[in-house]
Amino acid sequence: MTTAIATIPNLPQIEGANLLNLMIVDDERAIREVCRDVAQTLGFHTSIADSAEHAYRVLESNAIDVVLLDLKLPGAGGLEALHQIRERRPDVVIIVVTGYGTVQSAVVSSETQNRKPHAPGEDQV
Image 1: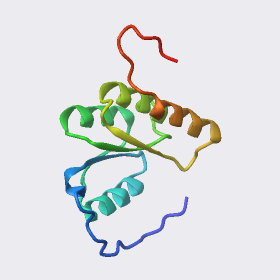
Image 2: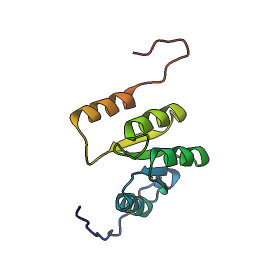
Image 3: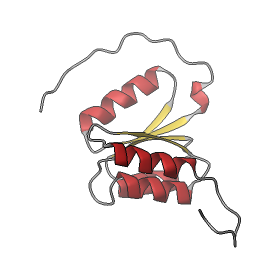
């Protein structure tokens, strides 16, 4: 595995970004830290998690607006985490990222993202 060290330029803060709470879920420490550093530089409040189970605990104890979610996670895995986060917090925006993606995993996660909540008693399609 190749590791690169990058410096973060002085980026302008995004107006209104300080109102967003971002959780970064990735099992690779370097990825979590770079994403966190960039997000904080842009004005986001950040939380990090290294597994789906850790993400569930963070989600329960913090106000989270956006989740940056890696599909390849230990334990429950990214797709299961996507389903669980959507079920527990349907208001949260989830951005799926992966370095190991396939067309099938992209389609599955996209379909999951695009489902709208249904009323009790309605059939899901």
